[in-house]
Image (cartoon, rainbow, N blue to C red):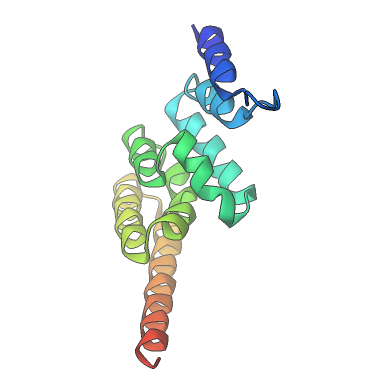
Length: 141
């Protein structure tokens, strides 16, 4: 079934004019065959190596970063969920990122991940400080 899905994705991705294949949909369909925690970690790893201007395309093929955070938390992968917070910040907003970070922090607290909790608290503080700075800059213009 996975091979058929991959073949269909490859056929759909072929550019009729040049014959070039857009491999992102093919890769995204293959990622869906992985366990949720593995899939989310692979996507997070790719996001960290992807230029920010290309992140929207990556997540349009693989799922929104907020939904991937929720999927990671649902399967108990708190660390994997934390890896997806930067894409949430870059693609959505500081408020969405803080909300996602709070969900990850609550799961980290429930699982006794003290080091991750401290890292998330510092991360949320930096987001808040940067958001206030951005607000001050736009107010003076």
